[in-house]
Amino acid sequence: MASFLGLFSKDVGIDLGTSNTRVYVKGRGIVYNEPTVVAINLRTDQIITLGTEALKMVGKAPSHIRIVHPIVHGIVSDFEIAEKMLKLIFEKIHRDTLALNPRPRVVTIIPLDVTEVEKKSLEDVVIQAGAREVLLVERPMAAAIGVRLPIHESIGNLILELGGGLSEVAVISLTGVVIWRSLKIGGQTLNKNIINYVKDKFSMLLGDQSAEEIKLKIGSAAKLKEEKEMKIRGRDLVSGLPKEIILNDKQVREAIMPTLKTIVESISSTIERTPPELVADIYQRGIILSGGLSLLRNIDKFIQEKINIPVRIADDPSTSAVRGTGYILEDFQNLKDVIIPSARD
Image 1 (cartoon, rainbow, N blue to C red):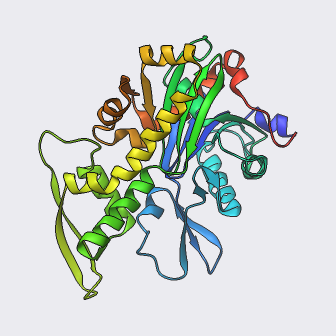
Image 2 (tube, rainbow, N blue to C red):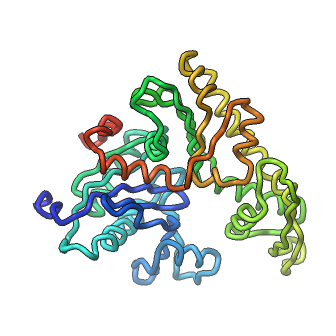
Image 3 (cartoon, rainbow, N blue to C red):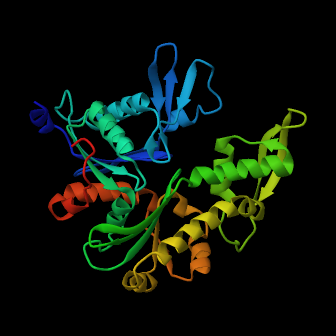
C-alpha cells in the first residue's frame, strides 16, 4: 500500500537544520525554506503556526502558547513536535497532487558526529511523519554535492559547513569523508556571544532576535572598509527600564571572536590529521564555505589569513546542503554511494 501511495508522492530532500528547515522536491527544486520554529497552543495541544510566523512570536507569546525549537545542534530534541512539523510540511508540498495520504521517499541530512540512537530517532520521526523510505546523507557530503565538488575523484576537497547550531569540517575524497571534525557552535552561538557582550559591557539585556539583527546588519569577521553602527534597545539590568545604546562593528567582532577562533582551530586540527597527498590538493584547491554562517561579512578573509589557504564561499551557501539532497534524488544511480547505512536495519 505504501508503494502504491508512493506513486502519487514526490521524492523530497530535507535539511532539518537548527535554525532553518529546507525542503527540495524532485523536479521542482527548493519549495520550503523557513525557520525551524513551531508555536504550540498548550490548551489544545495543536500547532498554531510554524516557520517565520512562529519566529515572530518568540519572546512575545502569552503563557498558553509555547514556542518550540525541535532541532538542537542538528539533532531532534523534541520528537513529537518535529513529527507534527514534518507532517504539515509534507501536506503542504503535496497539495497539488492526487495523494490523499502522501508517502514520499525522503533523503535527509544527518550530522557526522551522531550516535546510532540519534540516527534512529531521526529516521523514526521522518517515517512517522509520513515517509515511506528514509535515506541518510552526512551534512558535509550533501553540501559538497550541492556546490558540485568532484566527490567521485581521488582529490582532496575540504568543505566547512557552518550552520545555526553546528559547524562541521570535512575532507572528502572518492565519495567518502576521510577526516572530519564537528563542533556544536554556529550562527546561534554568535547571537549568544553578542547577548553576553552587551550584558557585560552595558548592563543591558537583549533578546535573541535583536542579537540576530545586530549580527546581520553590522557583524563581521574582519575589519570593514567603512565602520558600521546601529542603535539597539533592550532592558537595563540595573533599573529594569528600557535602554538604548549604539553598538559598532568593532564591538561585535570583539564579541564573536572567541567562537570564530574556535572554528579556525578546528580547521587547522583537521588539516593536521589529513594524509599528505590530500593536503596538497587542499592547498591547491582551497577551502569551500557553505551554510548560513558563511554569509557573515569577511569570514572568508578571516579564515584565509589565519590558515594561509585560499577560501571561497559557495554560491547561495545557506541552501548548499538541501540542494545536495535534491541532486541525489535527481541522479540517484550515480550518487547512491553517498547514502550511509540505516540504523533501522
